[in-house]
Length: 103
Image (cartoon, rainbow, N blue to C red; front, side, top):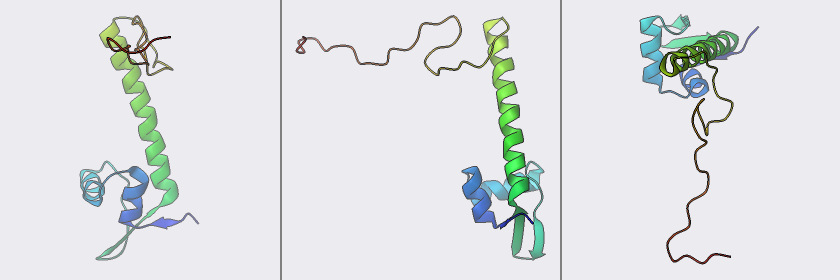
């Protein structure tokens, strides 16, 4: 049987507040918990992890389609966060300050 998580545990796994977990349950965005009593809600860890993995897939698809729409071409999510297709990579080092010592 999968481990049962309290609301605080679910919030920690998802990186959100307990209020956000409650709101997502109320909105039907998060799997419904088991109601053990009026004050004891539990989620199966496997269901929460499956939901989270599904969200990652949706986010990847959304990022790819948004990038394609804004670039006007077939695009993929860049492997490097330093550059988007058709752009120069971001500068990763600070430029030398005027009057700074140089070799």
